[in-house]
Length: 144
Length: 144
DNA sequence: CTGGATGCAAACTCTTTGCATGCAT
DNA sequence: ATGCATGCAAAGAGTTTGCATCCAG
Image (cartoon, rainbow over all chains, first blue to last red; front, side, top):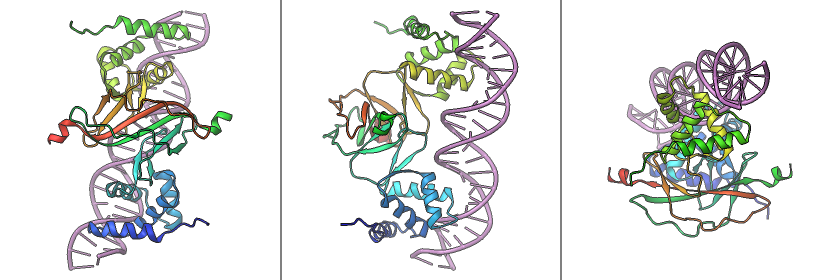
């Protein structure tokens, strides 16, 4: 079965979350949310801005940042610091980890359950999430 | 027994590595190396610059960056992207992981062996290192 | 001596802030 | 109508680059 991009589900989810908080449903928020969910990718704010501008010309970069901050708050996306200096935004919120290529900086998803267990709290530090990043060389760079 | 800061060992290690590569032993390199090894901390380039300037006034920030790049090459320190936007440099090169406080951004060492096993290569991706970052709230912030 | 390391200034990337305008509710 | 969201410009952090000078080998 062909996999089509379903915009109505992300739209409804976002609308629900925004209304529950008394926040507004704006075209920018809808479009950015759709972009994040359409591709299972790790996007920079810059890339999202470029993509958003295609659907909604005139959208500003600060708005993209503000929207991303909000989405992180809402639990819709995850911030990811890997490889490059830029922050990446990941729409997959289910537990999964990342493989970063040391040479080209590409970030791939790792579906291996690397850490089966959540570690216990240590020294009064309350653990909320575990991020595993694997560094190495991707298949494409290995060939070159 | 009191633990004093031993500069001669780091100095000798660095000198050996530099000579082996035909590189120069400069005061800046010695001082920055000592600073990194003296404290088991996670320091930003800015913090290292400030500390270096105390011992060696006039040292420039670009020199600190160049030196850190070299040290990463030599395997003396590890780059660490955690919490804040700034890159941290960690002098502990033995396998260990990090706990980042979501609120204050502090980075603590985690000595728990979270991942006993190195994961196998996946999809042609050659794994070289595994970084585990635990996110949560530190003891100090929890009280506040 | 000589080439590699440093210092300085400037540029560059990524991100945040302040304020006036505009639109969702 | 109300006030939150947006757009714009500008500032701010962190890092890199280019070039002249200098010093470790």
